[in-house]
Length: 417
Figure 1 (cartoon, rainbow, N blue to C red):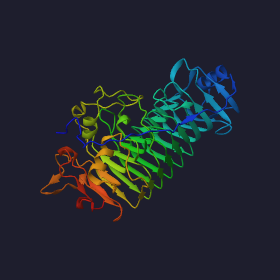
Figure 2: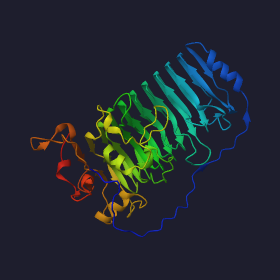
Figure 3: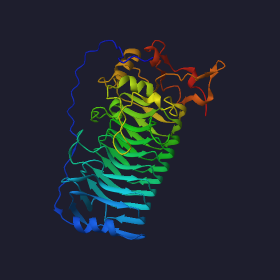
Figure 4: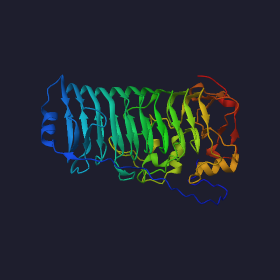
């Protein structure tokens, strides 16, 4: 059993943050709402919806449903701007559902009441050179997701820029055959998140100044579970932003200063990334049991389409496996110029207490599944292999036993998948 509180030796520290992350572009709005609403509803298959150059404001969602082979094209990422600052109807800026082969490209979208762009139940969705933002200072009142395909197949997200999401900037949930590449994400709680998705490639992105750079999660109570995720060639740097997720959201447990966080999923390979100056941890590998123990939420997960909260009843999902397994972290460039981690979270305090100024770069919570051992050996299905060279400190935290047997550079990580 994992205790609800983690005891750490007292540390006295005053942390002062003087940074201000805000986005205040100059806008001169025009009104094309009625014409564009009508065009979205009446457009025929295999056509292009051309968005003009300019700044346009809306108070209703733009909805595309049941359409095939549609291209929605602006005049440039900063030339065509769709603002939902005055939104009164709908939660999303653009909502796309039950479609096939949709392309969104060359425009910006701002300030939806909920998610800036949400796509559901669609086979073939491409986001290309789309900018998603919330204006003003980053806030828990911002929408949860910037670019949000869920329950989709054949997803491509490339050359986009996303900032200000109170959950994840780029989020792919319960989807398959996904490529996320060459994007820039910052000022989000999570820069990029793959959740309960399969056959996902996340490569050559830049994630900086988020709370956590890249998250790979499996959560209970959903329609499918994730596997086969590759994370490579990314720059994951200085993700030290204060966590501004609304109370109860699962990403609220992500410590600021997290490079990559792998939660309760399987078949993840992390390699050839630059992971630097993330104050708390470069790569963290954790079980859902630890998340449930740390969280003080209401215990109920929300439906797909909104930010997820921690589900304390996760064990009732008999198909869900809460432990990370078949994880391979290797050949990354992991470093930090910080002597101390972020100390406003339990992990930062734990690392200082146990490691002093010689902090770990890769940490596993060490919570074993009941079937972790088979005939006295590690079950191959639960291997966690780490190969980062002698200069990179790794740790098995043994969180299930109040860190009693916390181990530095454990031999069990010396394996391959």
